[in-house]
Length: 371
Length: 87
Ligand code: SF4
Image 1 (tube, each protein chain N blue to C red):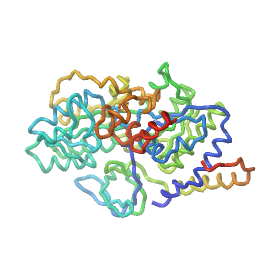
Image 2 (image 1 turned 60 degrees about the vertical axis):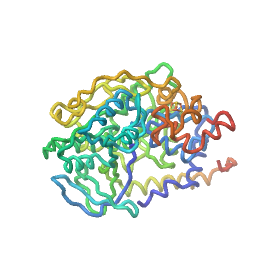
Image 3 (image 1 turned 45 degrees about the horizontal axis):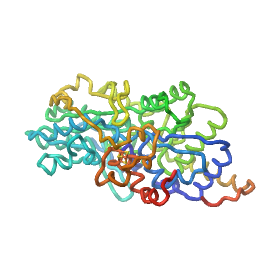
Image 4 (image 1 turned 90 degrees about the vertical axis):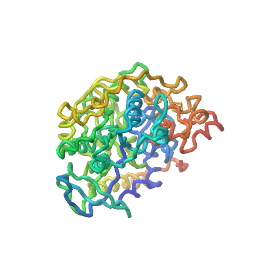
């Protein structure tokens, strides 16, 4: 698309950085919520381009990273069953459960298939009526309309062998939890552009006024992130706290109404446990009872499995913005994308994997610390 | 995971009661569900995430934001230089 390349212009980026430097009088800590933004920031070195004193900390916005260990273990228990074709987005395949990952189960004979879209999982169900096809429905509000549509369509068409293991998470309760934590350092937020394309940003206005914190709803290109940062710094410097929309080309205040209706027809809000963070009240979606015939969690009565995170992994603190991947002794040594100890090392949008991918573990060895 | 990719609608059709489209992303063409963007038609840009269009991309807004950013740069050139080291 036109205007994609333009949003990567280096000369303009330097101009925005200069503008930030002119506005800024003291240090500020800003969190980007979304894992896609984290990836873009580390890939383009945006955090290193920013003036000293503007610290970007990485938020909990990678659904792969925050899917609880119990849920992963449940998924594995279902995938092991001989009558099941287990379908999932590709990035879930290497997330370690208590015992194995989906890729290992696949090599042991389980029918695990990667799909690009939940609608592809529905196609697999239509084509394999003798099998039970389960889709691992993870994601934030961005992914919820697609997942809702697949299960809504399955019900409408009567595709009885299609079900979903739902582990959806919602962004606003997580932001509130971060702001309420006693060790919180975050003073402003880059809001998640694509989540808001669906949900709009009314919920973020409530958070902004309740906690007196500036939020800029921000896109994913380098210039978007820099401009979002400038908006937040301007607000912080002038003592304002409101929601501004940097990502006007995709986000409207009310979001996508049709998508919201579909989501609330299919899902209802529930408490949800986040990997590394713990339980956050009203922070997830589950299927409404009208869709119980497509609810894999109910159909496959998988018992709660006692789970334990590797003790070395500090991903919980990384997801809350308290620590950075460099602070973890395992980072780049015993924990790498090939042998991940924690989920933030698995998904390319996890902070640990993004740091590793763009060579920051090498610089860690040279300099000890890079921030 | 929440990556949305802007693409251009090349063709609209219906499949099992769902509104679908063929969407071009550079050279690649993929199917996307248009169920939640009923007003979108051929030639429009949509933001596609996991095979599902979640928003219409506003080309005018895209160019307007870009121009603003550009102007900001130009205005900066008028200000006294702060010895930009080209970070
Ligand atoms: S580097 Fe590995 S062990 Fe350390 S916090 Fe990240 S995922 Fe966990």
